[in-house]
Length: 209
Image (cartoon, rainbow, N blue to C red):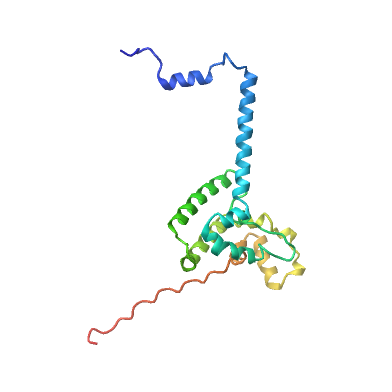
């Protein structure tokens, strides 16, 4: 018969967890904890850097290699006069923690499933969903007031004398918070999608015909 006075497994585990160690000094335990924490932090940073590179984003998925990455490389963000690039993660991934970790986990799972299913495995499939996919990204950018765009582009650093009249007018709205970047700059890194036409209502014909 089991000893009714014996502590449960969970209680014994926590008692052991918080009891002083007879074998290791407090300093040794702290040192081991610091080493584990350092390795975990460094490993996370390395993983974030690798999975956030243009090479990984552009070549890890077949569909990205074939349809998406070439568009980016030919855009002003991928190739320009000064050679300064805005990478995939600069635009698509939050720059602050923990939002960055959460987004990468969610997007990674979503993209892996889509790639396995072949959701956009051909140019025709990609083109059919381009408008939907683009609007999903635009909605995300509008929701955070184009936060990623603003990490590089600030109204204070803009030279209005080098902008045309319409750009100056729109950037004043941007500066006052009445407009956000993505409302005007939707085709910066990828081909501008064509908005699908509304389906026409069927023409009713007389039952006598």
